[in-house]
Image 1: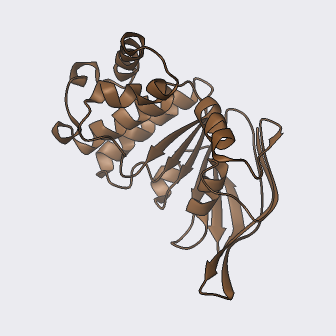
Image 2: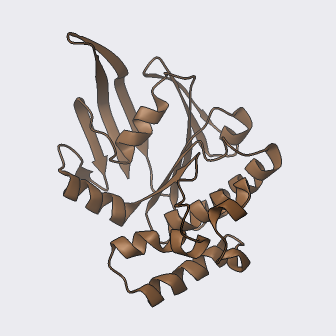
Image 3: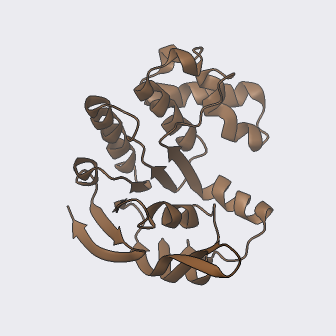
Length: 225
């Protein structure tokens, strides 16, 4: 479903130097897998997730998503693939502070130009899926960290993506809440959705099917759980 062949990525440092962040990454992720990426700060794991999420370009190599070569897309093309195929969950939740939980979940459908009543009804359904139907009218500042992440997961799911990309989804949560969020992600995975997760926590990675460990921009090893 997702295939990376010899992906390289660098960033300029000053006028004449470059920092190579990814140094030839080869990864094949099958439909329905639950995969985690681990590595120390600077290993390239977040850069890799951004490339997989079509949030960043790569310098050389090939990235295929559903057999489509993803390369040199303009922003309209990139947004189309993201909206149709991908859902995102972030460590900082990225909820809009002046919209309630229901409105935050409904946001992807607003960009798809769905009418307000229909998108809000769907948002309520997805809030119910993550156990927050009773919190639909609450603002983000009235929610706990775990509740905010559940709202973010519902928002990622509402456009019915094929792939969820989660960047440190438990990084801002306590241990028990982290486990609760991972159990929710595991239940979503059991519905057939592919999940790619970046984490620095070993116990979180062990809850996925496969862990890909990066070091200095290269794959150091892979572990099947």
